Length: 359
Image 1: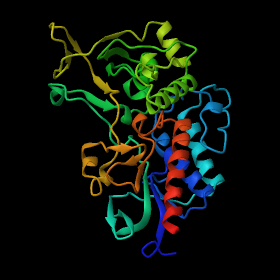
Image 2: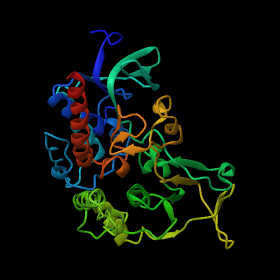
Image 3: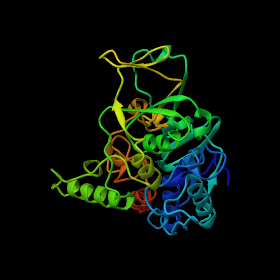
């Protein structure tokens, strides 16, 4: 059927974990839908992560709806490559209609629904689910002098492994899981300095993604029923999950952090007290922002990286649903298991609207 003349019940933008979870529930509901993915192969951003990255939870607690993730032989916490293979197999298992590579450039209103544009191509939809994630929008803070540094600057999104930094002096910036996991392996081949805006907070060794998801879910429910004041969230326990590699690096003293520097110099970094440190590279593990530029024609605030939501729907355009961008689109929705649970509720709402429109 020609997409130029056909109006889908839903068009899902993004074929990573959140998009596939939405596809699973749309398929189960019998909806007419298509998934548009900018990637050239299945697996979403998991194809782009560095090889040693580990999930925070065992495979049996990191599933998408309908199918448990198989265990990865020899590893309690699955690697990025294992997750990418799982997502690829998941897509085939449920026969999800993914079209790639398709880079959506804009979503607009049109009579009867929404138009999803990718260059000269257009898909017509009653509802749009945006699930583009954050990987394509790395964030680096504006630190004075950053443009003057003569060495290498890279972001988590650029990191592929420690080999490129072997024998060099590297400053790692950021107090989250990516910084800790990368620093753990970099410290074995390079001279490393870790800088954070506040002292790093390690979760207890027996707490991983399973417990964090449960805490996030309880907090979200408490907020919904009006008893959320003071309810603990995952961040109250700490920021860094002590996966095996992180525990080993911490034990040998490789994860001792310095305060965040105040400026970058031509040869390194400097603090307000006059302390200077020369280095060859600065690795910014400073997070990401939601990829929402394709939604700016529909919701102008998307151009600023944020959309007001009612649940997971745009408050300005109820035919637009957002999935998988973090806690603001559902408890732990940027995780595998969280994406599935959020998608279930979101798709139920979409299907109810479709059925109401047919009556």
